[in-house]
Amino acid sequence: MRLPNSYGSIYKLSGNRRRPFAAVITQGWKDDGKPIRKYLGYYTTRKDALSALADYNAKPYKIDDHGITLSALYARWTAYRQERNKSIPQNYKAAYKRMEPLYSVPFVDITTLQWQDLVDSCPKAPSARLIKVLANLLYKYAALLDITTDNRVTQVETPVIAQSTKHRPFSHDEIKELWNHKDDFAARYALIMCYTGMRPTEVIKIKNQDVHIDEHYMVGGIKTAAGMNRQIPIADKIMPFIEQMYSPEREYLLVNEHGLHPQTLQFLRKHYWDISDIPAIKNHFPHDGRHTCETALDNARISKKIIQLIIGHAGRDIDERVYTHKTTQQLIDAINKI
Image (cartoon, rainbow, N blue to C red; front, side, top):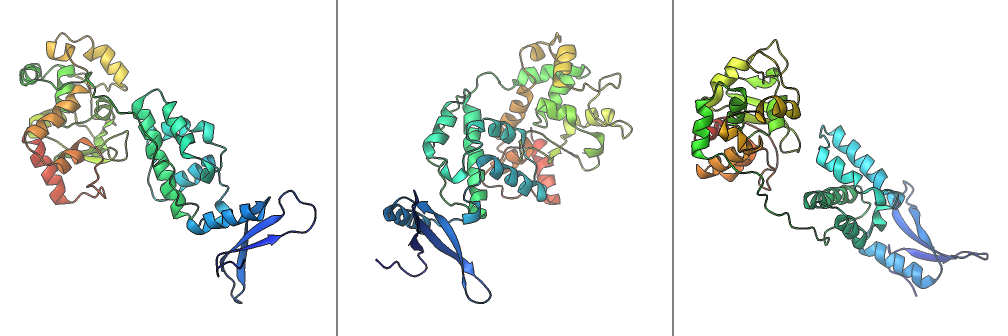
């Protein structure tokens, strides 16, 4: 049976071979017009070779990289991102560690069931979902390299993340209580989170060099690609705190009444938050300030996009994290409405 033009060829090799049938395809042309031929593989029967050709023609891939393992592809993907000044978030690194059972498997050979088993073995729903997120990114990169366009993680089912009841916003009366104790370091720390939407550790890590008092914003953020290096507007209500703590002579912005910087959240909780006598502090976790800000912005009918930019959440409607002067002012105007 004659195969269609450019479809590929099958040859039976001489000698006593276990897999005598070779499938060959053309991947480009030389300057003299001769084809560049690549061996697709060797097969036991002609039928197997025909099946391999059919699979290849249905979804062509780059022969040279066809056997690249998951770990090798991940290494190339991280290098690709770093070349474009894109960091690898810690949650992606954690998700990759959970892929260890598949490290040595050729990426194109990983089946949907293998991905599903990996996700099912993950004890926490958020971590399981991150495995699928990272796998999707690797498939997109593999398609960019012409390794495969067959995304086998698409059909993987991930567990539903239960709505957390651990964190809750500060109430209106509790925020008033915080303002009544604004000279207390723990209360001031809580108010900064309530009026910036920053995570507890993000506040601790803000550096003075990234504070722009005259322009009413700071640059900071951790954890996710959307959260890192974002512009954080400074609300008029907390500007006196920022101005008082700000000092170009120190590395970090957040300091106590003695000018000392709490280096970790654990230290801050042990020496300030957990020993506070203020009821509004005793009844909440530090992260509740972030929830308070997001809730207040939503109650003020601030657009979803602006809330995402302030809080540092990724959204499908945000393609590029490029801030213009107009956008910065919009963030400032929004935070001053709460």
